[in-house]
Image (tube, rainbow, N blue to C red; front, side):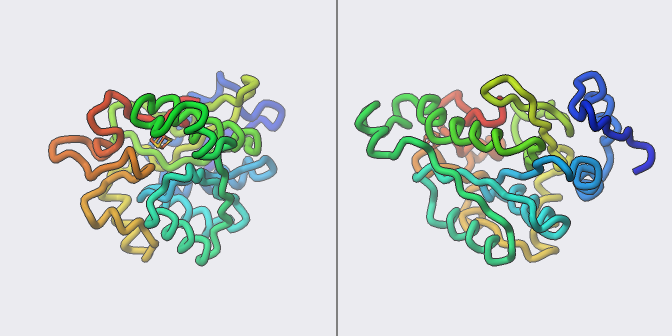
Length: 243
Ligand code: SF4
């Protein structure tokens, strides 16, 4: 790791240095990137998020092995599949330090305020309440956010840097680290199967990306792996990766 720039502790997220530092990690293994984070930024609040999709399960497993105390924040929208809750519990049983964050607005309060099944009429508004607002509260608890997104998952993720910046509601920066950006789906499954990592059983039933029940279907035959999300709509992201 000697070739990688060290972090200025006075300005760890200096935007001028971030792009060069991110570029220096291209070609490095995910484990090496995470090791650098824990070694250089371990004094800060480092945590990951996971919805326990395939890459999220890899991240949770890798982080648990490398630094078991790392919190794993996950958002329970109240609309998850039972299979998604089951895989979350399986990782907790293996020692992952899972922190479940729920929306401030219950489903019944949302229905009273916006009418029933908001996700059918305005999924952006629904995601804002059930995913983005909880994610903002998670960012308030982090300085370094580890995430499992990959560039080849969808066109909207194609330019994701290894090191980027997310913004809290007050505009302050959180370092966003994406160690798997260069991975393929094959890399993900190779890791899961080699290490015997629990994964969502829906992935064996035609689903390639699993979110909330009302907005998730098996992938379209000719679509990318997120094509089963919000099918029939232009929407491709819930919004947490635009913060
Ligand atoms: S994925 Fe669907 S149900 Fe879940 S928060 Fe977004 S719009 Fe609502």
